Image (cartoon, rainbow, N blue to C red; front, side):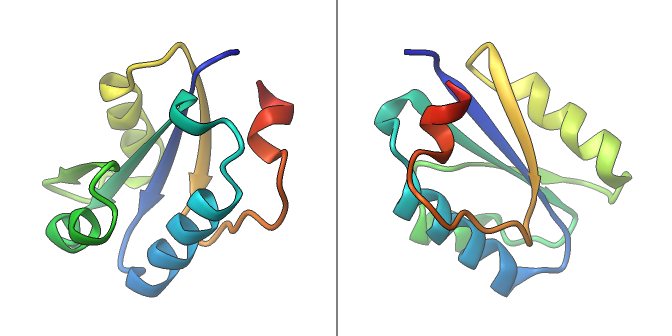
Length: 102
């Protein structure tokens, strides 16, 4: 099975990021083959996210450099070869979403 890094970029969206992460873990069908990375574009939610989701790698960006820069930061810290990029307001709604990618 392929290992997959899911990179989620967030900015000023506390409710959306929690809903997004909840959907990721609810519909994760590849178990430990999924790495979740949240790039927080200067909104300082790192500690709050890690309290609820300790397995998530949260990168606290020191400035809001936009979508491209945030994703590039996520790429630099990902452990796996393949990645999927999502915004914080994307919610997974069915099983097999990750399995179909892998």
